Image (cartoon, rainbow, N blue to C red):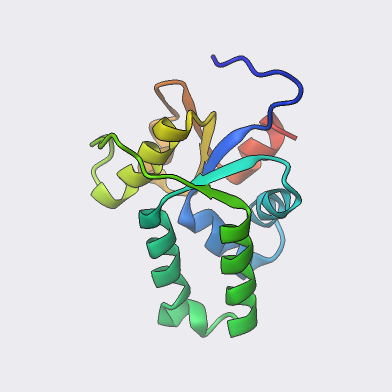
Length: 144
């Protein structure tokens, strides 16, 4: 397990589904995690691939019907402004849905402690090379 000093902030990667859940539900663990992101309580890492996926999901019909344009812009703006964009150098093939591997690639490049996800393909791994894969609620319990 990685050791961090009191002054280090937890390094995480947020799965797109956590951000969308925060947008739609507005309450609950994903919304609290997003609030922590805005408050700078942890360092979130992202990549061009994750940003592109978020853009696409925010414009899906089922999302646009349930949310306002302003709310989607708020979420996207604060996600970008409070995330550190990196370009992973290593490709991994860990989960069967190839598009999910980009989250693990960013975790590895950022030396992240955890991936916060609601995706069962990722969650069933539980851990990968010392990266904890947690639901939003589990993250809130382990890293209050």
